[in-house]
Length: 437
Image (tube, rainbow, N blue to C red; front, side):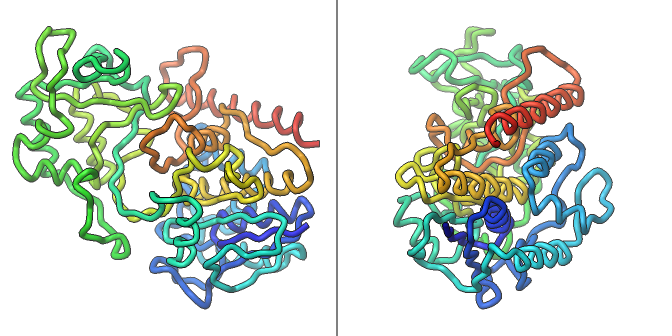
């Protein structure tokens, strides 16, 4: 049996190695060194572009848990990272040149993997299965092919709103109500501001510092519908009150009156463990988002699952297109891996490629594919990107907010994260022992 893997980034190398370990011959297509994206400079595989940090190493962090799960599943990226680790406090940072070189050598030395340095603009024929492992800067030709298969919403320039953990919202300073009482009474959590609080928030947001936009991300055609909140605020003192902070159709149950301004939070996932700040697309620096958005009394202790971002991104509408095993709903022998699936981050992308490779190999052998338990980080991510309840799909990285909460209430954050991580690893080991013989 033979599979094609398109893309030699972190997802692609993980996918190819997973297929190889399971006895599948692989043609790994990578357009470098003949052609580079605007962000890539090296001629080798698995290039780290923006940072050499693979985030926190400790197990009781979302990033650390993700890497622990990947290591248990045989990740070539985690293995290689420890071979070229550099000191960086509590983070797993690497020599990015060595990281790429080590992985390239491992791929080239694998007898089941044939590295083909060629740009792919159409799906290759003659394979038993294919995995597209594309990043946020997929080539124009490949992007057009994917768009033809997946429809609109593939490559666009957007500003995404932050997402916060539900249990960090101070409900004593909030109330639940849909505007004009349309829909369910608890569809939205409302975070009101009085006039003084609003004016302080306005001054803070118009003076907050924005994040740098890379040259390949810069475009003028930012749609009005996804205008960054700080840009909207700069147009006038009351523009936010006529936009995402409009209070019309709402009555604060605590006062019996309409708020001066109001931020609505909308459920981000089926279980209601995460909430989206409606209309708060932003390009502010992460530290500024934390400072400014926490000025809402209801959000003073908010834990940000994902900060808002503004950049060119390439990803498919996964909740409508992908199963939780990373296969196409319409074509069980075509899988996706990498940031194109809607996972965000180096190791998240690698993890998706790892799962796509494992699952394609199992499907080719006539075995059930693997969807890890929802209380694992990889399992939670795979469910997030395939959750049909998500209407305005945006990329997500590893975060404890996407994992179901513990049955017991633990107030100390680090203790809670430790227990979540312990539960995840126990669950992963039990699942693999039962399903992989």
